[in-house]
Length: 396
Image 1 (tube, rainbow, N blue to C red):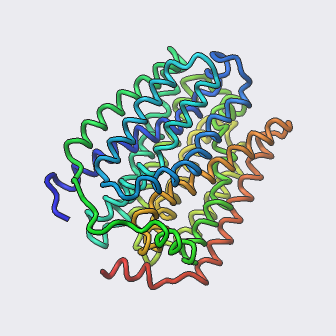
Image 2 (cartoon, rainbow, N blue to C red; image 1 turned 120 degrees about the vertical axis):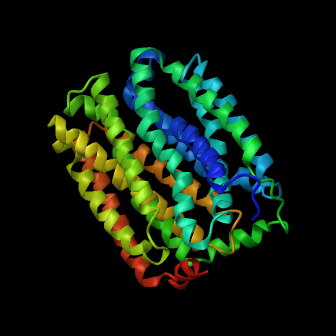
């Protein structure tokens, strides 16, 4: 692919976009108390903001990509980021909790196709041995959002007003729109993508289906615990706004470290490394509430939680995309959608358990159990998947 601008410049704009989208998705975890106070709802109810966003990504993301599959990537990216800007303006001005939820639905609808297109273009622009690294770079915007955007949003919302957070995100959207308009290569597909063929290819692909199962039935446990990180830091560590902001920063710092570390993994070693990541992540989640009571360890656990969570994500994304060579237009979108389906399942389970008066410790134990089940599925995957796909990806 011939580029008018350097590959790193295009990836930087993609990262800015995924930073903005990631901040929109995750910043609410640091503002649950502020939403509850400002919009007169219970804290347990505000967890719906995460689950609604995630289920919207999972359902509407693939549908939007199917409808737009015949169009060129550049105009689509501009349309999607335009929807994103409008949705965040709506959130900033939301007079009721219901309107805030509606704004989340709009921003969530563009999430999966936006990520999918960015990852697809990043792979096309990269040499075969750098494809996992390119996917990690796109994903890196999201992890940096968790490191900087979420704690900044939590601090801004806690000190001033949560509405300012969404105005800030809308501004990031405008900057992203400008960057995409300037640097994104205007690629026209050499042939019209065949939707039915691509979907059929994924449904018959045992390697891709096993990864999807790992995400839905294993990775979902992450969000059973992560959804209520902010109130857990308040209850167990006794943190106020500054402590919570610092804890969320360490979670994000770990996320960035884990993300870029896993981006260096050789494609042929992805499954083996995934088994290790899930085993460690399950242990971290199981111990989370017990170690939060010690201030220093609270920050360490936040860092490890972030590193485990987002060290796992690029591995799973890479496995779906590399395992689906016959579905180049849909694989990235499906990957993003499946992750958010898992997020929705996890957030919903956490909310249900909290409404049922289960303690945060019980919730995190249950979350760890789900993650360990994902590890078992990964071991099974290692035995049955088509390993030649991953070796070929590295050798091309």
